[in-house]
Amino acid sequence: MDTEKVTIIGKHGKPIPPDQISKLADTLGITLPIGYVDFMQAFGEGLYADLFRIYPPDRILNEYEERRQWWQDSSYEDLEGNRHWFFRGSEDILNPDQLQESFIIGDTLDGDNLVFYPPDPDHIYILPRHDDLIFTTDSHFDNLHTLWNLEGGQSLLRIFQPLNSQEHLRRSSEDYNITQAILLAQIQAQWGETGVLVSSKIADDWSWHLVAFVPTVGGRFQILHDEGVTREIVTEYAITTIHGNGQRRMVVTIECGEDSVTEINTFLDDLEKSQLVNWKL
Image 1: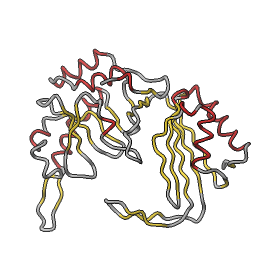
Image 2: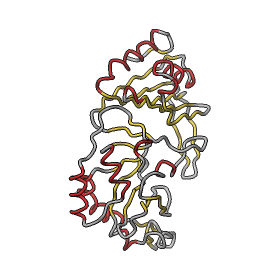
Image 3: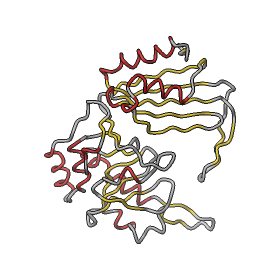
Image 4: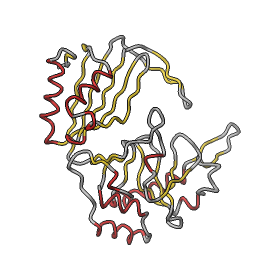
């Protein structure tokens, strides 16, 4: 993996020592995928591309047998009462017997599994949550961020966010005069336009959603605005009813390094002083 192309969010990552990675390989009796080794030695446990959780060695050791059992039990019943393997149709890619020889090395926030099958060292297998067809990517991890796209079709950001030493800040408001564009402009004015990486920017008639990273403060900013209107959301998987209470609301959730809490709280307080928002106590 070309780790030099990955932006680290914050300063608190804990790379895994080579001896721990070697111990994992020896215990399992396999050669680990090169991308996994590079990732652990450069970054350690954390979130990659704001989507992938790559497991540290101890988690793989603790969970792989349980996950194999879950894969074995994964099935569904058709209209005639017959049971089928959940990933039916993927047998030419990775069949149930091969899956029982495989190891989970990570997952996504959406519940997809990242799997390594040792006899095929060149690939990582993706077991999707919302589909029944397994697919692959190269085991060096360099294409991992291209498997899913952001709005507009661009690849996911090549960023790494450590999961250790994170502080969690949260504010909400029902009294505000701020749009998605204004809030993003305020963040960029504070930390520089090139110092803010936008991961997600979605809007519709009733709500908007913004996720942005600020590497210098180790911050992940997630802002949700909703008009409080009851409506139906139609996707390819389901129709979901959102029950509104008639009250518009904005919720700000920030994950950041401990040494950046004061700076970020000052920024939020300044938004209130500018009469853009009244934070709820």
